Amino acid sequence: MSTFSGFGLRVTRTGHKNFIFAGGGTGGHLYPAIAMAQELRRNDPDAVIHFVGTRRGIEEKVVPGHGFILHRIAVRGVRRSFAVSNLFVPFILIWSIIQSAALMLKLKPATVIGTGGYVSGPVLFAATILGFPTLIQEQNS
Image 1 (tube, helix red, strand yellow):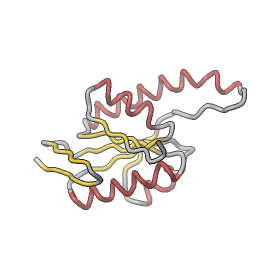
Image 2 (cartoon, rainbow, N blue to C red):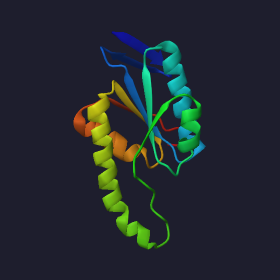
Image 3 (cartoon, rainbow, N blue to C red):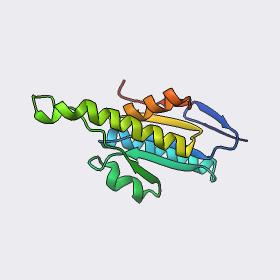
Image 4 (cartoon, rainbow, N blue to C red):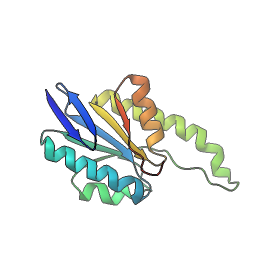
């Protein structure tokens, strides 16, 4: 059993080494997640840090450069003006929840941390439905 205490959080886990961070699209959501992941890794070198993002967000280039594992899901944002692509968003969202649930079942994370951005929604939803502990850190709220 090991414990991580930082940022006002105390996470105790037994046997689980996987942590999932979901947040991205912009640096405002991603860089706080990277800072927390680095602190977690510093406190527990055995922790395996996973990020979930998309191919279109900043995380595609930034996360691997920090030495973290990046898993990609299909989720995308909604265009504010009318666009035919918005008609596909509900289906993409459902597929993203399925992708996230499959990742949860594979990794069995100790905790799933969301830091904002549209990628956090399906990941945290899947984690909650499957009973994995979740945390939200969103400095813009």
